[in-house]
Length: 246
Image (cartoon, rainbow, N blue to C red):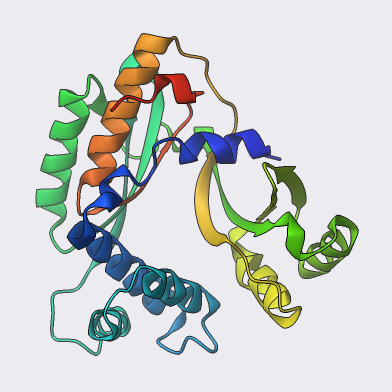
């Protein structure tokens, strides 16, 4: 089972591009599209959509933007169909990098992301080249002040979750993607609000890199994350705060 340090690792410098309001709304709109496509447009029955909407509202995303994204996800809009893809490749030092993509033009996205890899000192590889180094898992976090650990453990095990760890005042719950909604529902029934709830790619093992290589990797991850079509970026390098560059 992936440990909590893996969750910390993929959060290093994640979301730097979100400082720009327009790009933040674009990312969140696509997140809503994915959720609506996967589970329908009703946030009452689609918990993933509900959390996506809550996330959008937390940064004052306009209601019209949210509604348009829902319609686009459910196919009720006349706009182009969005396609979910994954791109894989290698960063500086041979670090494995995995990207979730949502695009209306795969040829454009492929060419642009490939260039970002190359400019960042890496290269985009063939499908499956690094995917086997990651596990796709549901990860939910809660503030430790909201519930006792024993009570939470009992609750999530009954819902089918696999692991519970603590990290910096947060509980980190991991589960298989197939029962992710069950765990979300169990928390909802117990009136426990998660700080975050996503299905992510966690590295099976972290790879040590030196300071210089780590800085190059983080710059590449930032540039990939800044691309409009890239929803999430994951890496198996062990990155530290000292490697973070402005």
